[in-house]
Image 1 (spheres, rainbow, N blue to C red):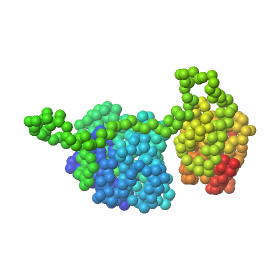
Image 2: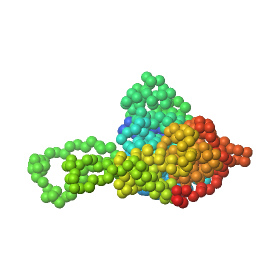
Image 3: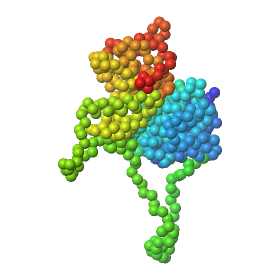
Image 4: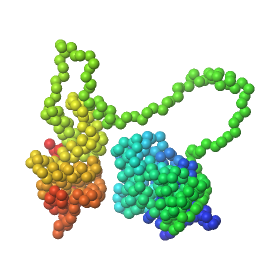
Length: 503
């Protein structure tokens, strides 16, 4: 069924039509400086298409919650736990309900985490629920930044990965990304490049105008036109809009944001006793609570715990001779205590499904309680240590040249994937049956077998493994660079018990 919605008036006075069915297959990018009318454009698109397609809005400022009054969108507060967000997103897809995920009031790190968890849950929905969904992300440069900023690396990677999945791989799952950004230069190129439809609004910076002209296939000299566009005026291009750049004026909307730009008002006439009015305090002022002042963003818990775990500085005052000094800890004893702490943490069967950051915080607390002196491991070192332990390597294999090569090869994948990679490498070196999807999922910290299969595809794209099957259909994973491969294994076999939990 072909559905065309009215976005406004095109040049020449004709209606500007947007083909929703084509948009679901080709995605949309909206760009314009603050005040150019991006939010108005998104609201027009959402209102006009509400009756035709399910909608999910990632709303960092809470501007689109008013859609619930007229169009029945469910408002989801982003200040929830990860499990709650995953459950809500799963049910959103299952019951085909339109919603607005409002992130208003959260710090930028929290906004990125909440949005990435929600988007990944939409992406990971069961195949039975892959219904068409229009996923609108306002201020997309916040969730898919082109460069690292002041946010943590974990939050940025999570958010960027979720946005990449949405724009690059979401189409087959029914997810159609509509992203809006103030500046193209701040938006990750691999996210922006996946859109085939564009609506470009007023832009002033040369770098943004040049990128907009490139996306629209216009001459660089024509890019000057973006400076002259009025509020609500955009240039449209794409299979769902127009085959040639087409100026359009966005039409009116039925709902409005809770907040709007301040309007100019005439100044009131100054009273004769203006000085008494200003300098004489109101008696009620003394009963009011003091105003809350902005406080700096809280430091991450991992940073605080790492600082507490460091060896305390030497005292300025010399220690008295009659007071016993703390005994020095040998490197062997320190390593024994660290190994004992790691064994305690990873011995819990649920540890496989906790994030590395949570496990790292637990490690720092336990290390402090065990009085392990010296600088603590960094999060990156902790991840590598945990990945090696979870691979369950014996001493003979650990001392082999092939295992050393496998460790070097694991540097090609990101820190969060090394656990899965080393489990595969250990099976290949020892010629054990290829781990099942369930086993790989546990190594990654998830219950999703589909996600584990996607990881194998990612490793193969990186050129570090080769996946093939034998005549009976069992899976084999080969590592060409270390000259090893697994024995055939059943990809659908159930996961065995955690060996660390059994000890």
